[in-house]
Image (cartoon, rainbow, N blue to C red; front, side, top):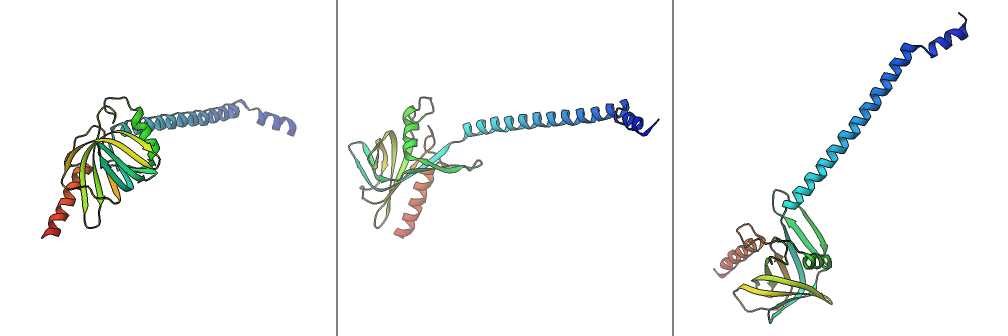
Length: 200
């Protein structure tokens, strides 16, 4: 057999070709299985994330330069363009959204746990010159009016006259009454502890 025939036989050896085919096929199958596993894992993770987010209850904070409270309306004057949100443990999610988007989401809510159906409670903290005055409210029907954010309200607790000054509004999770773990309840109790300490 000449050198040319030897090269030709080596190039087309059936056993060698079969092994090469099996190796190539195994690699392709492995890659396909790995890709499928990745897709399944990604899909599972995405679905788990969606389910987790459904269970998260977010707390909201809105800041403004001044406040007006009269005739069943709360007006946050010079309200911040962004609304801060965060969740309690174990999720510990935090971020911010445009206040305009917050209002739109509230207005279009139709579910039984939406703010429209089950209005949230909130604590309004007014930073007066000598003290911080807290007012507990039920919040309804938010709307933007120029640089102000207006709520219809029912006052649940009010210990002192309403001063003017910068304010923060702490809004409880959807439909949750004030509880020991709520931001409004915690904030109120903390301020009262500080006040008792100052009085002494």
